[in-house]
Amino acid sequence: MTTEPDTSRPQPIEQALELRWTVPEPRLVGGQVERPLLNMSASLALSPAQIGQIRENGTLDSIRQELDGIYTGIDDRQPHDIRFRQVGKDWIGEARTGWKVDRAASEKTLLKAVLGGETRSTLTVALEAPARNVSWAATQKIGHLASGQSSFAGSPDFRVHNIRTGAERVQGAWVAPGRTFSFNALIGPINSATGFQPGYVVTGNTLSTEDGGGICQVSTTVFRAAFNAGLPITERHEHSYLVGYYEEPGLDAAVYAPSKDLRWKNDTAAPLLVQTEWDLKAETLTVSLFGADDGRTVRISEPAISARKPAPDPTFMVDRALEKGAARRVDMPAAGMKAVITRTVTSADGKQKKEDFVSRYKAWGGVFAVAPRDDRLR
Image (cartoon, rainbow, N blue to C red):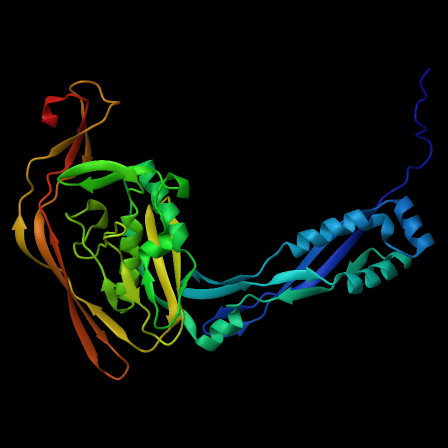
């Protein structure tokens, strides 16, 4: 015999208690610090039994587990250094403060609210500012200096993956005044264990596969940002041939640790922040530099092209997935040439530094993939 529940009696109803806290979230707009407030809340459901125990014992012990869960969620917020995002033509700097609930103060207020039959209570939350916070950035007069961009349109999936992996390593890097940025040192080892996938790299007069193929898209874009900012470029290597992804000649930067690195110096009086952003829909990578504007201006010439050489015949590489006789174009041909770009940096006092960046590209016949034992491999 089963007993049906008695639905004629009113069932106990839980009471929702709203916990609120208000904290400032500073931001840097046009060099000025603004302090908008964040109004946050969390809901705590109290059963009639729990309310009764609180009122009887005068403590919050009956809801300790629920409170600890809410506190942990708030305390998990860690401070993050300032980052910038573009809104229209403006750059807004935003840091993130860490939060820590003052449990003693908060529970004193909460106990009073429950005993008084209130449905709201206020949490006291202490703030932990990051080392590089908004006020610090305002003091340093940090703002947008320059950006560089490149397109990876048409890249195979492995190349897009490696570009994103490399860009993530660069994102948020700081370069102190007088220090030199090293791309290879920042990226670290490039292999499958560090998240990179096999991709095409130039080997002699053809292509082969190595982990990290496509990483030069990232170094090229970093170079363009530093170049446009007028920073001293202390090491830069052009590719052996003109790579179609990088469009205009003379603005690429090849890296291959340990022999080829991209290095530039922060010769300003303030720290420099490097930020990366990729747009998978537009297939673009953007690198932006933020620091103190010392009044320098930068003028970059169009590339002066000479010593042109026509592209030779293509070379061939093996693709075991292809059927006999089939061929798939892997890389486009490119003419050989010499390209010279002149950069003129004028300091605030009118002094000029003019520098030629010379790139020499070999003629390149492009590459086709063919099946194993194809006669064209000979």
